[in-house]
Length: 90
Image 1: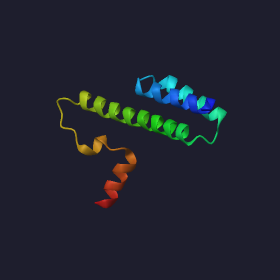
Image 2: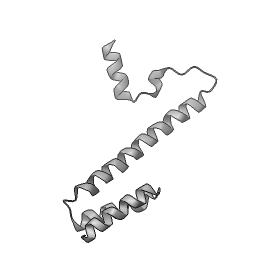
Image 3: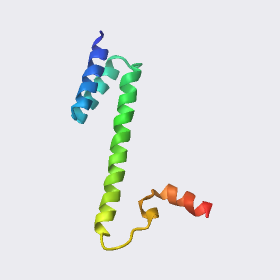
Image 4: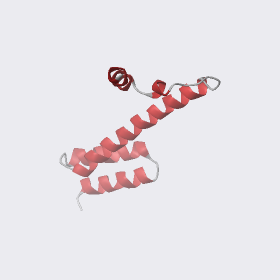
């Protein structure tokens, strides 16, 4: 096993144990050692996507909490580009 593979494996373990920042460091190091390592590239993309989805859900939760006594229209939780698509479809 190469050092790059070992770092990628360590990144996987860190991800599974909830140590996201350390996982990112490990995957990044793996790519420094072997820029063609597909597993590390994919893992970094998935971690970034997870962060994006979590931030989106947090924003929905904050809107819901701040409007607890009001009815929230479903379109308020849709990103702006999605709202534009909905408006064009109507």
